Length: 259
Ligand SMILES: [Zn+2]
Image (cartoon, rainbow, N blue to C red; front, side, top):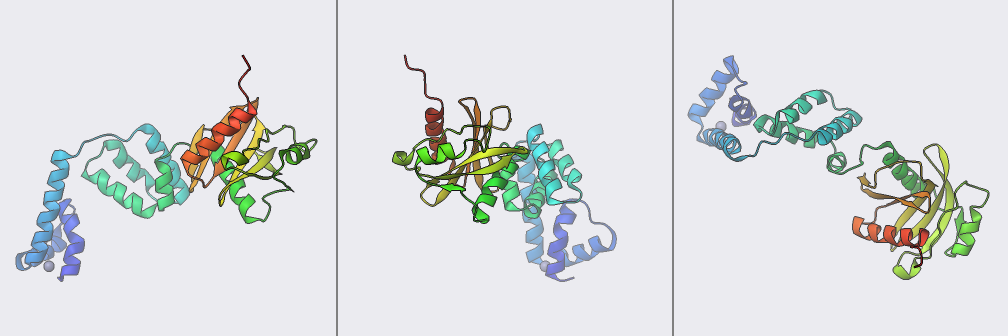
């Protein structure tokens, strides 16, 4: 046996999964190879350190649910085995399973797992609308930075009267508006910019529920209720600046009552 073959079997030996001829072949190699003996010892030490020092926390049910959803979407076979490992708690097996999982599932999916709202169908629709608006050369039906042009354009085209605020002074110039769809209904889409980042605001009646904040495929999403409407704000802008934008839009859409 050569070192390359031995290395590939050392983990199995550590896990007690090696028997018969393969075990004797590995043991024979170990007897004559100090390097591979050192690899085996390092693996043992790592296992012992994890057993002795690692906290054992069962993954919360919500995380397990999101893992299951993401794995199904990624078409990962045997995802239920990985889930069982998560359910047992963070033992060395579960850690090994989660490493395998992180390698197999794309980094985008893995990153989304840790964030709220990633599995929400509305979140996926909003991000889908946003991506389509950028790809299809169909960002705006009415292109204007003047809210007195954009707001009336929606009259008679869609059931909602979107709050078209002038946020240029805050660094969020208006680009225009367009008709879009969300939850199988026509929606008003307002388009703003922050430097090179496009911000879409999809405006629907308030009865379309969704998570207050989410991140999906590299896009951030904030959902607000303002002035009896649901505002779905989506962009690749960072979460802090998008929150600033959302706060300003909400203040403009539902100004506080005068004392
Ligand atoms: Zn060797």
